[in-house]
Image (cartoon, rainbow, N blue to C red; front, side):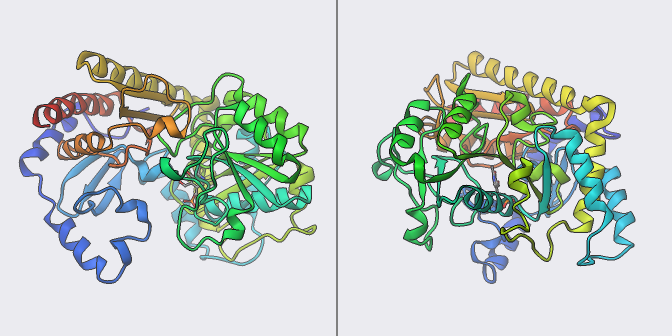
Length: 458
Ligand SMILES: Cc1ncc(COP(=O)(O)O)c(C=O)c1O
């Protein structure tokens, strides 16, 4: 798929930025904003891990972003995942323009909900019903509540290093510093933020992901109290770690054995690793699922889906809703986004898969050529590469053994070469259907040079 009117010559332009690389305006804006907004942005991840100051962007199109100082970047952050069809995709902005003329918000049912629900079902055939919310956090929060209502139990089980949003139940053991993290087979539940009540911590049990032994031992102790097992079916918030063969199926069986609902949080993987998410890719169907980012290509919306018997609890005992849930503009954007992705029998995913494999293999080659120990992993549309001696990474505790400073140092050099991604090594790289082989080529050349430069200087 082409990214628009760019030619390869345009791409060659990127290294010239090095000569002019200047980010004074970002620095000034950061200082000014911090006087009013704690940390300088509305979401901590936008500023965290940046040593001095983050870059303030002004405009984006396709795979390109331009900052307030006029520097151009090829974007490999893609807003942390949503931009599956690239920035300011013309078909999506046209749909938004069309619907915005009809008003902003009605507070009534509207036809777009039906249209998106029908589209959703074309992609996610494993789930009976769907409902819309606003953010990924809303979706996981509601899924957990439904699971509690359905089972009459209070506790939930999540996995170390998995992130399900910033609500109290999701923000447990997202990070787990070794000295306080507890046993590997039975990790301690740790709050990801100050202000989470101990009562909440007492209702969340934590297990090591990709380890059926840990899960079955914990279930033997607490299984009868647990309403839901929630997980990212591909762990994408602590680098990118794929499930071991048979693992998801094993969890499904254990959940059934203990009358526990299985929730797949597909906020990152949904509409990305395949049209039907990780559950289609790995052939394991959860009872409930949460979806967000790539559903709308950048507009605020999420979805919760699942088996009819559980979804039907909404309105039958389980409260649900919000002023902005199923916002018409986000619904219109999502319908347009899914229409692009389903074209020619979901051809977009073949392009995305091929490009990701190419990029992943090429990074492996860079590592080999430079004799650089790295962990590289990829799934369609998602990729990670970190500097580590570890040859096998299967869970959170493996994933954090890496050279964080080197990742950040290389990222800074990449930035100066016109490549944008997050400085935190735990963040994965999402690709989009509008990234091209030429974009990837520029990335790979820049990576090779940046690693060499970093090694020379350190
Ligand atoms: C797997 C997963 N679940 C839930 C969320 C929360 O989504 P949101 O930031 O839209 O609330 C995220 C956010 O990155 C996520 O990665």
